[in-house]
Length: 250
Image (cartoon, rainbow, N blue to C red; front, side, top):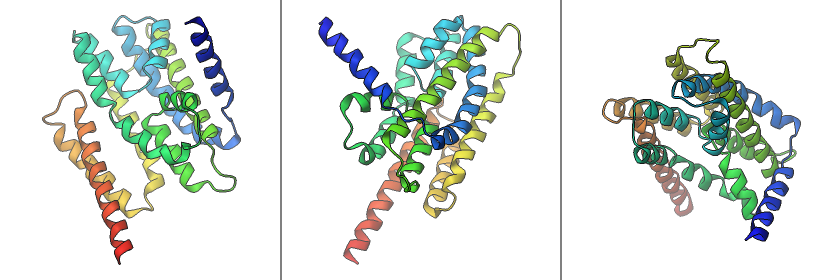
């Protein structure tokens, strides 16, 4: 058993060393990190109000690295929700990462299981969007899985440290946590700008936003975002496949 544990640690260290912190990775990670610092500090303040100390906040941010789900979990803790209800809600909210991971599969076909395990832990909405765009557009030199892994790691580091800082400094600073939703929206819009050249992506994005707004009136705990994302993503996949089949037969 000890040998297996040591072997797992060895593999994990090797995968961490495989990250490639190139100049373009830092350039791509900078906007994400800036957004995560603002959001992370706010999340840390919220966590302190829920009775979480800075060390616990840092550990939670790494082990349950999912940004929006962390906000939801902490908010439910403050409302006295049960462990199972919190776990189930976060599980449903994070189901979108299954779609994200499957979309990136073609770019990681040659990578080992240990690498994939470490990489997928760092997938968020922001890192997924930036990495996918980079894989599709960066050709000279090609964007590598190691660079994508490094981008994820930088995002996780900035988020976790900001959480701990916000939790520690919460007794010295005051922030209206309601402003967090506007910060998150602005960050998503900044990422979505990269896709404004694609008419299908514009239509899908607008449709998802409108549907999420309508569903927000009836679904609690941010589930309207998950449902809207799944429905519009499924519709987008259907239209793409239908179009490809039409071109093949045409």
